Image (cartoon, rainbow, N blue to C red; front, top):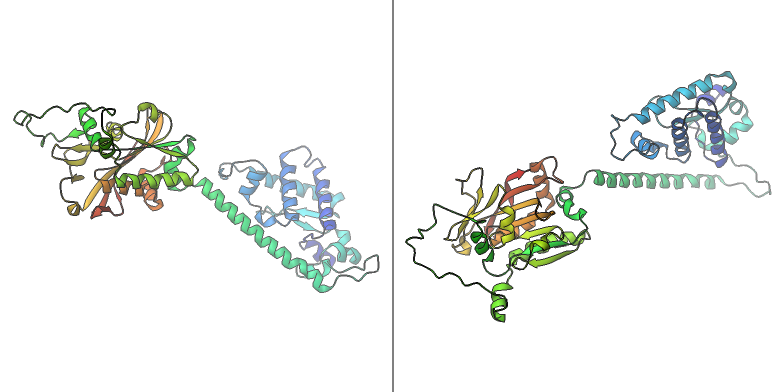
Length: 452
């Protein structure tokens, strides 16, 4: 190969001596007026040269340069912020201006081809025309690179030079290291993508996880205490068409106020300490999710929970008709519970109040129930200043299905699609439906969603 071909061929510095020659030439360029009057151009030029010398040139992409050199955020818009492309174009122009000067024509060349971020190195004219220097530092061509560049030299102490086998050992090592570097980049890109694009489940519970306070689960205990309190407070909406004629109904004695201190231990144990299994199951699924994300949670019975308790941190309200705190939270929302004195309940849609399809007769035998309904909602309660999640079924199977739904990646992806933009922080309410067999809920599905 003649000297001109050698000069035009790309050269890959391998030894530290060869890399140092490139760095010296780079510094020559940076010390000229083409570069020393700018901060941005030398910064990027030095970075791409050093990364190439260290064998990482293949990873020099626009976004990487924007993040590493110009401290842009990882998700910055390269189309709207072309700082890398503009700077590279300016560096390419200044390199051409430097070598256009006759005084630098015989020097080693560092070139930046159009459309590329990886610089190319070309030997000087003197090295290309001098065989003694060419074998030591410069490659005659890409295909002959290995043999010529690493020709063994006789050591000064008279010991034997390295064998051909020893010389080639470094190449498998370099290949392995390059492969590992690629794997690390791929893994890093995966983590970056996960950070830039969180899962729907992460977005759903983000407001809870962002709050470092303990999450409180408010569970209903005892018999239908929530229904009594909700009805008395006007929160639970009765069916006006089906309400009995109280004028003709036999009088019933007014219930005597209960005092926790006056209750016997047995009465307290039977009526006030009972927790429905489905409520426990829903609570367990959600508390396990919080534990996996290093968040503490605590349990609080609905009958002893206070508004001050609700102000201490995020709250998960378990149960619907038997939890007055759930009924209170649902009162201003589109979907809420309605029912009759005959124990028939349904979810009312305030935009279509005549529709009563989402209902359940609690008096029918367990085996006769084939479908249950539930409400889930994430709201920011103005009265407490905290975020709340409602997990409330008409029946026990509805609550269990809602708890399962809220930790299911696939189901929450569908919920995110239905809620749309702003899923990570918007308030929403959804009605779920689940098939039931012998009281056991199947996979829930979304019937309707309201977002605000």
